[in-house]
Image 1: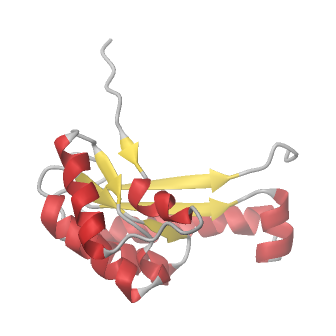
Image 2: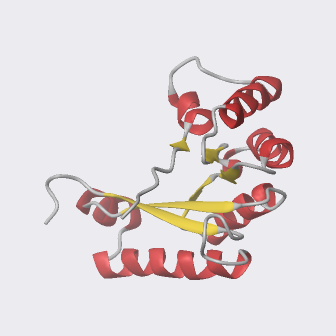
Length: 156
């Protein structure tokens, strides 16, 4: 059985989480070009719902390197975030939607103020909606949805 390791790079989104690290559009495009040359499989280009500038950067990256690299961006499990990701990555040959949803007890009780089942249903609904925007569920054949769950070690 052969296995393929898929490299999912988050530098353009997660890298800006470091205090004082703010990249301009040209810097982001240069990093995306270098990631493409490194044959990274997936570039998470940003968080387009966070600002118009991030949306524009993700869209530019999708148009520039999206011919040979899958391009995604981060969305919370809400329709407006999912729409922002889709609208910004749809120009890539292989657009992806990366959905994150906090499911730790703290997230469920304090942030969402809902039951765990209701929060999990938010994730299901988000994935179902995202699937309507992309052509298929395969990374290399027209689109993929990835959902990341955040949990804490104290959770059951």
